[in-house]
Length: 223
Image (tube, rainbow, N blue to C red):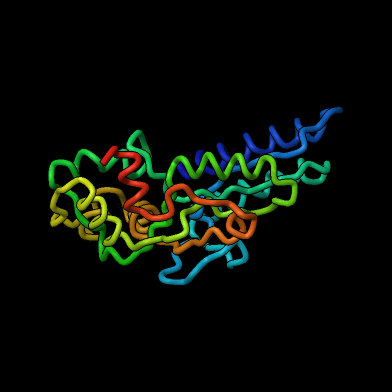
């Protein structure tokens, strides 16, 4: 039931908006629809671009259905951009906001093997990418909104510990995560990884303000 609610919340809202925009006499020139890099599934060390094959996990299916619901706007001549957003680095929310206090207390550590890739992006660069997509008339279709240097969970963990000046010797084993969250939630959200590159943003001349994980973390944490 919860999975159905997640799916329909993305599909229904996007469909309603797309159909409403398509029916306007004065249509907007562009619609930006945000989904996520989870659309690529769990892909190990594969380098992924907007042209890569999509995944077959539940979260992949959610993102695919989410993007599909913009068809009405696209058919009406509206330029549609699908922003596939990575893990946004901000202390105010998202994955960083949830684990920040734990890491500050010295209780941070890698998740599972730590080999899963995390395609992160600075919040400022998300805003910049949205601005770029709004005004670049040539940009349409899928656009990966991720930093140019994805890292493994182990590297992400070590880098956050370095920035905070705290140890990161408290790993969370895969079995413990599965016991706490359920197998599917743990496997798809925490233990799955995507090594995604911002190919189309870079081809469009977008310049990242924070191209490395350390620079992004130091900026958002004031370190």
